[in-house]
Image 1 (cartoon, rainbow, N blue to C red):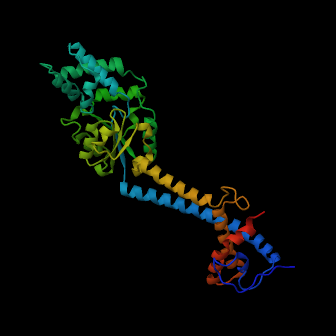
Image 2: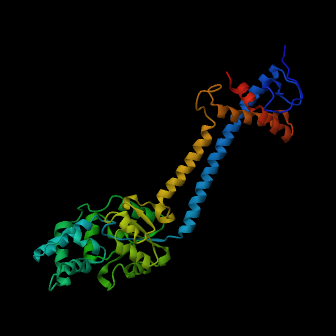
Length: 375
C-alpha cells in the first residue's frame, strides 16, 4: 500500500518533515519517489559535469584575460639588452680577484669586497674607486686597467672555461625565436667582452649588437650605453628591456627610461630594490620569456594562481565525498546535492513554475538528498 502525504501543507520549520508534501501539486507514492530518485541521480551527474566543465573554462578564460591585461600594462617589448658581468657570465668574483692581484703587485692590500661599490661602472672606475678609497698615490688608471686585462684574460677567462650562467644561451635563443632583438650592453671594454663571451661559450654572432665601454665617456649609471644599444637595434628605449645585476646598471636603465629585470647574482634583493628595478630574479636561468614580455611578478602571479586553485578546490570538494554522512556524503554535500536535484527535477521533469520550484527546493533538500544518496 502506497503511503501518501497530506496536501496541501505549509512549508514551515516547525512542522514535522512527514507532513511536508514531497511533490506539492499532488500526492505521491514511494514508487513515484523511486522513479524520481533514479532520474534525479542521472540529472545530477550530468549537471555536475556541466558545472565543473564550465568552471574550468571560466578559470582558463580568466587566466588568459589576466595575462592579456598584464601584458597591456607592461607595454610592448621589442629588444632585450643584456649586461655581461654577473648576468650572462659568472665573472664578477673573477674580476674582483683580478683587481686584488693588480693592487697586490703595487704592494697595496685590498679585498674582493672593496670592489663591490664600483661594480658595473667600467674597469677604470672599478680600479680607480678602490685606489681612491685606499689612498693610493700616483695611481695611473690606464696602466692599471691594462695590467688588469692581462691578468684577467690569462688567469681567469680562458676560452670555453665555462663561466656562462646556466640558462643564458637558452633565454637568448628563446628571445630571438620570438622575434625579439638581443644585444650585449656592458660597461666593460671590448677586449673583456669578447674574452668573457668566448669563455662562456656564447658566440658573438647570436647578438644583434654588442655595445662596450670603449667609445663612451659616461658609463653606467649614465644611460649612454643603453641608449646607444637601442639606436643600434633601431628600437625605441620604451620598447627595450634591460637585464642587470649591479646598482649602476639598474640606475642606468631607469635613466634611459627602460624596464629592468635585476638578478641577485652579485647583490642582495634588498640592495637591488633601492634602485627600483621592474622585477627581481635569482639569476638569468630564472628569468622567463613571460617575465620579459608581460612583466608579471611570479610572486603575485603565484598568489593569484593559488587563489584560483583554492577557489576551484572549494567548489570541487562540494561535489565529492569528504566525510562519512548519508550515503558516504557529508551533511553539507547532501544538502547541496539535494537542492540541485530538487531544482533539476522540478524544472525538467515536473515543469512547474519557478515559485513552486524554489519553495520545494529549499523546503525539501534534505529529504530529497536522503532518497538520492542513502543506500
